[in-house]
Image 1 (cartoon, rainbow, N blue to C red):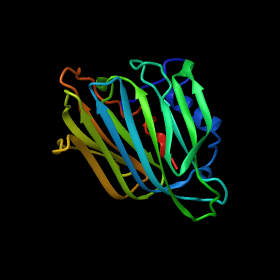
Image 2 (cartoon, helix red, strand yellow):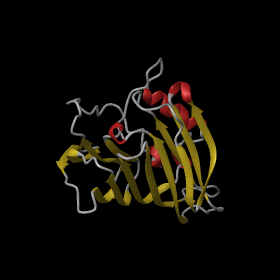
Image 3 (cartoon, one colour):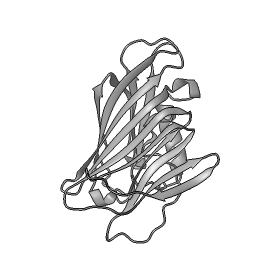
Image 4 (cartoon, one colour):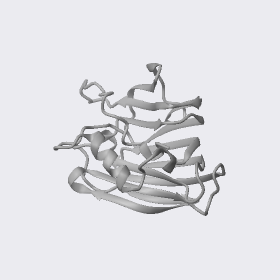
Length: 228
């Protein structure tokens, strides 16, 4: 999803960091380690609600509750409506951040049951955003640790299809992009094994988009559910 700077006295990075702290994520050990990650975004031009499903296999780094954050900072062009977070399997929602004045919303995702350090668990959740399909031009996900497998997919429904699609990757060794095409399911896909730390994403343009450049300095707060 398109990233943006926060319009106000605080920068987007500061707002995002404050949201994480409010959700109780104050150090690296408070995050679960994402081992396998799958995100499927459904961008539907016939609806004003866009859907994102996340399925993860995580390893607990300490005994007790196994947790990850999901934080969204909305673009100024999007309706300032709180995303809807829905647990699908193996998790529940704990603390919440609802900051409409900062256009920031987030939740603490808590894996079901007590886990010992080193144990692995799977869970899934859904996020629904009130926005037009044309408000969306990218999906990105950042990983602070190496994951075994990362898969990002975007499925386009309705009458509109994207143009100028590309995959995007940023790691400590640099940045790279390459063109991708819609498959026969009307999906874009990017997959990497043993990826991270770094950012992986898919970007596209709509037919009537302006030629605005994507700002790589504005970090990937949209899909930061797993900065584990």
